Image (cartoon, rainbow, N blue to C red; front, top):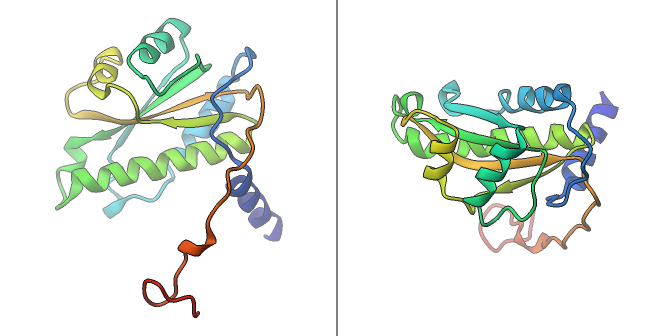
Amino acid sequence: MQSFFVEVEQAILERRSVRQFSKRPLERQDLQEALRAAIWAPTGANAQPWAFVCVTDPAAVHRIRVVSPGMFWDPQAVVAVGSDQRKAGRFRGGPELARFDCAMAAQNLMLRAFSLGLGSCVIRSTNLEAVRLILEAPEHIQPELLVILGYPDAQPQAPPRDPGVIFWQKYGSKEA
């Protein structure tokens, strides 16, 4: 059991937002594994209010890139993580909760992708309605974010983290 926790910690600490990818084609099995991890994310009331569209066709990836100013290079794959508003609407606060659920699913996807040697980056700077139309998603599927994937061209350095944002018992307290 100890090695599992080391692997999880390593993925959390070493995963970076990768924006430059090699031209090496993605293995479909790697994408399937990353997507499988996404659907095992926690979700409020077990609603699982998400839909994932994995785009690997270079022309379709480019169309998404055109409406996504936050996407600087063409990745090998784009996963659109969308909330299913029909499932989300069954619960009080469901649409907002679905957005959080989608973010947790994206984190699972990115951590599993890292463990498979893939680079990833979340993109929210995009025209979400245009993405929905490009993907031909029905109106009840609301794209929330994009995850770009590919084999990294280089591993970015970690930006510093501020441990001073951790408090105990109440805001501002450093006592455990």
